[in-house]
Image (cartoon, rainbow, N blue to C red; front, side, top):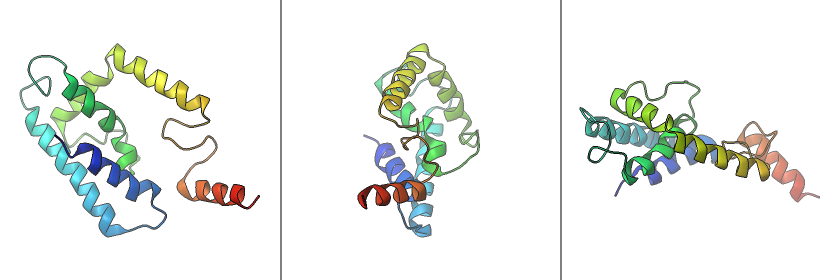
Length: 141
């Protein structure tokens, strides 16, 4: 069991989706994501995979959240895992797998068919404020 999904989800909510900026909540969940990355980094020390000597469900469960860590943390840094070298190396192995690339392309196509960008925002919407204005305008019709 991991806190990755709940903590990454809360971090994303308070950094990206919550209409009101709450610095204490943002700090709390940003720190929790970094704590989880630190635990992963320690777990991966001297190892190629999270469990055993091959890619397992554990690796697959963690990689999708880590692939969105820049969005979750609300950073524009192209290397948000740089402070966690073991996680960074593991993540690069995971996202270079053909099966991961294929699944992300399928996801992108499904989202595109629904009018969504890869980050989940509707096409043409750049931030939450624009999205809220669009929803309000559509509700006023």
